[in-house]
Each structure stands twice: as structure tokens, then as C-alpha cells.
Amino acid sequence: MKSVTKSPNPDSNKQSKKPDAVAIGLSGDHHIDSIFIAYGKPIKKVSKITVQIFDIFPTILALMGLPIPDDIQGRVLKEIIDETFLEKYPIKTIRSYENYIKRQRVSLSSKIESKENLDMLRALGYVK
Image (cartoon, rainbow, N blue to C red; front, top):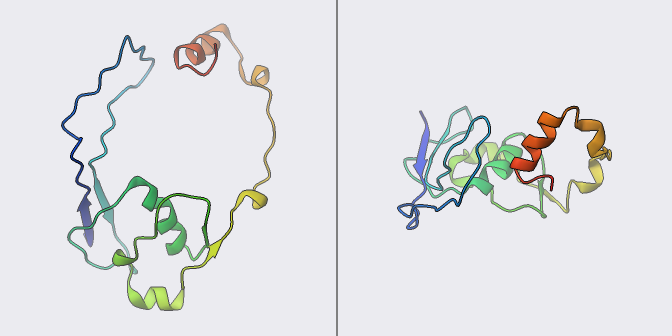
């Protein structure tokens, strides 16, 4: 392993109160404290850094040599990337990927095939 980190959070001991939550299928708790592991040729050995979930996406883009959009949260974790890699593939930015993505509108009714699916979407709060 080359890089392992745990992000400290003072609120991690607080219990969340979920009033009458309905769980369908798999369910779980989400914690802000976690472990981040990165491994590979351009990754430096680092023992501990502060990482937020938002930092993963821009870091992956940078490791792929792709520009980082200005309209996202997070930062490139330069401290885990080898300097020679960053010299060869400098971090570039673009305003947004929004103009590069072709979106197709889909009718909700075309995706709901049964009453069971509609009931599940209602329980999850997607449909009233």
C-alpha cells in the first residue's frame, strides 16, 4: 500500500435520528470518517492526509490526464501524486463538462413498469 488516510471529523460520534424511516432492499449508515487508499505508479507513499469525498473525482481526472472542471467541489490531491507525473501531465482546468455531455430527457412513465416499482419510488421519496 502506498497511501492510507483517515479524515477526522468532530461530529462523527453524533447519532442521527431517523424518524419512521422506511428501508427497502439494502440499507446502511453513512459516516464522514473513512479510509482512502490509492495505489499505482504515480502515487507517492503518504501516511496521512486530509481527504474529503469531493476530492476523489478531481484526483481521478488528474490521474487520467483530463482537465478539472471549475464547477465541481473538491481538489486534486497533489500530495499523493508523484512530482514527475505532474510535470509530465500538468493539471489543467476547464469551465465545465456541461457542454460536452449530451443529455436525453426520459419520461418517468416510460421507466415505471409496475405498481411495485412505483411504490418503491414513493417509499424512497422520489414520487409523491
